[in-house]
Length: 254
Image 1 (spheres, helix red, strand yellow):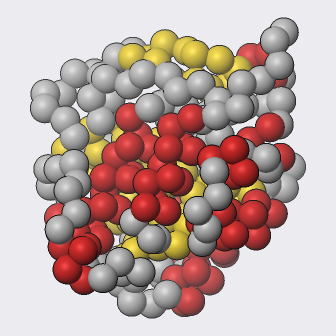
Image 2 (tube, one colour; image 1 turned 180 degrees about the horizontal axis):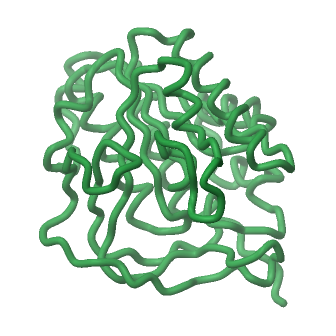
């Protein structure tokens, strides 16, 4: 852990409106479009700002559970980035944006901040089971670190606090499961101006790549805005224009 004086001296990117959420005993859930350069940087900035305030922080990422031992060892070491990227998560053919170069950058930043990183994705084949199991892992984590701020980055359907997704009005997202467990949380949806991310449009690896996003210009970024702009979350985190981040380990040429 960083000494208190060193933590207070950190230089962090400002995120307007974030300060009230960066407090001990809170859970902050951020729903993203995978595969951008900007959103992982914002998560790093939020973690830095919390450390600057000497708030204990744990960061939870949508990474498979089996990557945990490798990730723990790497975070506690001075090993090279190449050592981190040897895991199956980083080298799998289906590169959906969660194993991007920007995500590897985020892990390097979190290691610099001496923070604990927890993977929470059991990735069963059934999506409904997956959301329930991810929520269970995060609820357990809440019990393990009751005094910490838990900063969570997930896809922007998992973070929804209410029932339903565009294709299924009865779907139970991870955020809904956490709310049913009475886990206190604030859920933010990342909004953005036009740009692109690296994502997959189907179940085949060939569908993965840079894809254009329409987005909506909302002025200066980054900024947190609480309120019911979107009915299924507590507010938004506006990131500005997005740019695609390719996989940290380039996939084989097709």
